[in-house]
Image 1 (tube, rainbow, N blue to C red):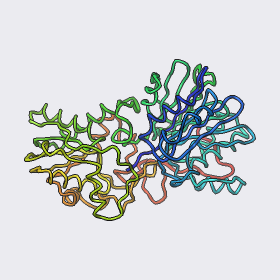
Image 2: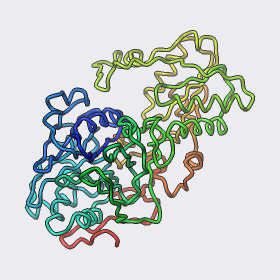
Image 3: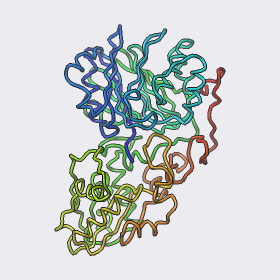
Image 4: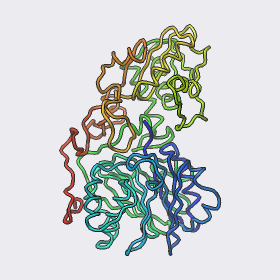
Length: 480
């Protein structure tokens, strides 16, 4: 799996927003490495700088100096809708009759094609094939007829899917979270203004204080002078659909997502993993980096139960092998794992070992890791996973494999164990996830582990009573 995207927006009293936005994007870099961008407004005109690549590559001092204005939004992207190219990089910006508009989107719409077709028939010209531009065009159209709050509400009544948005209309910065709260978004207070961000770690980077999460279906409008913000609860649902993988994998451990510190959640999940399927081995070690918190909680729970388990770092990660590391032959692809992860032989030699990871997608990496540990001299290799088996794709913004590629889609746990070569394999249950997060299963998005989704997706089952909005020239606004 690869990350979703990260969004941020700031409104400050007496300094330019560019550098705080830049620092915030650095804090959110783990959520997307394909492109980075910032759009600001100086009270008279909009300024934009969007480039492919990492944050540090996309911006230099000159670029930041040209982004004038005390209000702005930013985005880091991993492609989920629209492909890998510069035209889909964000924030997306446009000027129209009612002013200028910038928009940064984390998530994925499932009815973007329907809205796009309608808007094209009305004469709208699109420059990309991404769903973010669809939202921008729809909102711009509504702003010609409605005030800002009503225009956002009308667009929310037409789009269906997952979204956390930061928007800039002229020098007003807005934050919007979809009615199911699938994507995280929070508000922070700075000494001289306010910030909206996908994760609280971005607020920490600016020496700010987390105020609270943006509620599902809520619109936040920051004051242009940084003095405060207004809240509008535009849509309410009986149930939410928080993405549980934010806590399992995507969010930084030091972020607070939906009122929970991610690090603490992962340690608790590790403890539940021991309670459900613990095995007394000599060593427990994480697959870096996401398995670390799980393994720590697992080992602590094991020792509290009287097991004599050593928590150890047995795999060292090479942080200079990037996502674009491609090997042309099968032999080189198999060797690639040794460039990324190298076992510490003294940790595992002549010992029974449990390795803890957050998930198994295709099974290729897990197979290679088990082989590495065995080659380093381990007597037994057991695998424990801090999430349920992934049996279905994600349509909500995670770049996940298709069903044909998902190893758990058509194989039992024992079949997977045999394929990866482990002595035993266990996953965490869905009920344990819900219990640790303190939420009912019906308030979580579990589509990738159940095959039932909280949105109306063509050809897929739903886990609740839900249907797409009717898209047409007289489409109704969101619920009053």
